[in-house]
Image 1 (tube, rainbow, N blue to C red):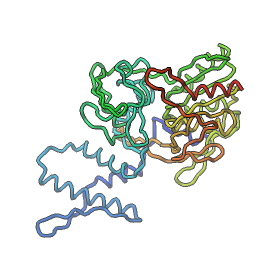
Image 2 (image 1 turned 30 degrees about the horizontal axis):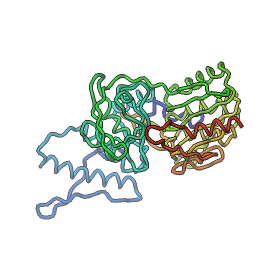
Image 3 (image 1 turned 30 degrees about the vertical axis):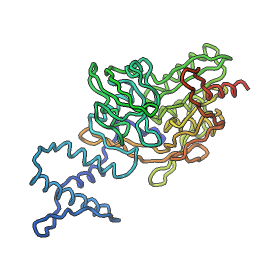
Image 4 (image 1 turned 180 degrees about the vertical axis):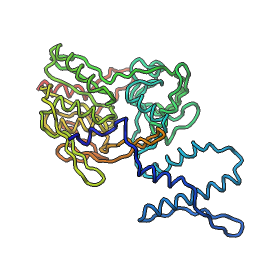
Length: 403
């Protein structure tokens, strides 16, 4: 039977009939308002154990707001934008940072990113612990790298508009645009503001880098788990194997995740057939176990490098290798995103990306909001200006492999 994870993040999705019905109820203006003297009182929806009553209360409030807008507002109303923002607000009310509603256009952009092709400036972004959008790293050869944007830069403005409090998707949508156009970026670096102007270009993302290190150690860095990265990983390993690699470093630092299937495909290359790779539990407490389906093709000593930005699919791969005794994990504790989203397609091309399950490592270790502790903790100490850069975590990994 097809495993639960094989259903994650599929682009074809399904028509979420129940959800559509709920949203339709939310945006249907059919309730009444109270009058006290000449002032209308907005009747806000109140909490109730009955979700249908809750939705009716929301619809009542929306109707009252709309009547005030129709009577007093002097501007034009973009009905589609109001509709989209209403639904987005409803989903945001779940207070789940990973669930979101996307319009058809936003979903198209999202898929383009997942396929590794888009028009932009070429940066990976994430949220730091303070909720700021921070640059993980500029893509090699990208416009962002060319103008000097760096890892750790906190993005505070895009085209003179503040993005403080925005999520990465919102910032990405502002940064993207037509090729050849330019975008202005204001960032904070070392507590100082710096301004950049970057030309947008077509970006081709290569998810995997590999090289041979000394003492027959192969090195593979995975920047993301977008579509096709497992094939790239296999190709990279085969190239290293031809060059004589007998040991392997898998670098997942700053890799914020992506498609669950891609992470599991890579894990399946290293974990013996039949061994557990992932456990998931859905909203109804149903537990699914995903096991390795193929014979492992990578049978050598492995070190996995992680840090605080290693998240989601990175944690799935790390946990699978660690709990099965296939790798030593070096670095700092991972981010702690242990939930999976399903994508539900709606009839107009928009989608709901909804958190539907929590995942655990094969030893049933909780990841969400906890993270994975490395076997060997090694901090990455920033070097002083003008001194030689030292990768303490990689050096420790190489030391372990030699011993």
